[in-house]
Length: 491
Image: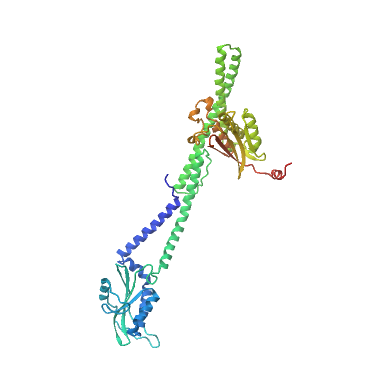
């Protein structure tokens, strides 16, 4: 079975994919159009911090003897989480841990130049010494092992040499994105969260509207599939989804017209056949009295056939009447236990039927339709269970509904027929004969009657054998008199 993925999840994943592709395109643009390496681009927000720390270090180096410079760099390294080195000229190490610089780093040290003159201007009277000039930081990435080198050009001088020479402060770290000195993730996380939030706020109304409309149309289609054509789909949308909803409403109205017309046609035919059949039965009864010998047997057989035809016509008439619109059916309070008891007394034919129903239970239904539904179900149970069978009829409250169960221990029906058993004229293959399998309208009449009472009907096989039919009807609202009566202790 194909795994179902909700539409909202699909759209959310599509948005994430879209944002990811945009990020990739942006990175390519930075690399190709702006001619920046990705690492240099990511390092850009930290350039000011790197420059400030390097210039502050340069000021301290001016007042620090060469013998103390290693301690000064070690202190800076511990404070900022990177390793500081100091180089002079084209690669002569002055301070910091001993290191063999990779060739790309040495090459960058040799070809570096300062912007402007090395000599800084004297500070105005009364102000602290000005920071020495420096060039923008540069980044070199080396491998085996991976290492990130950031260099800052400074004028290097000391207490014994007042004239500045070209110097470079090197900062190294095996990590870039996880080193807070080189890369501050907060702005990037904030920007990412802002992009996701804006995208979510932009897409949410559209997704909710589409899902709500699709859910309404799904429910409408399910009601149409169950034969309930009074679907309501809001007509507020003006796009293709709204047009689809309008098409479903028109389809439901057309189908309802076809079905109602078909049922009225069947009802009219059945009604017109009632009178001729009644006259035929009367004539056959008169002939049977006068007939003798083989003629009497033939007339008796013909009378049975006419009786079967009359029964079929009556069921057609019942089926067409039960299929009327619910608005044309008057519903009232019906006592469930009383209705079950009357039907059992009329249809049991000596077969033991166990009834378990609270005498206070009431449903909202059309009394004749409820009696007809129960009669068909109990008649079927008696037919397929036999006189030695066990038939149980129960009624219990279920929330705002009342559930009526009619169960037997007969052979049941094939599982593949459970969804079709309530269709008109449907008979199981083993019950094609009208005398044993009926006309195929009994359960269809049950379904039409129950749905006309705004209820539902379903069936399932029992274990090890048997069939159980469930009728679910809305419970009748309890009046103050009913509530007081139910609270009064009996006896």
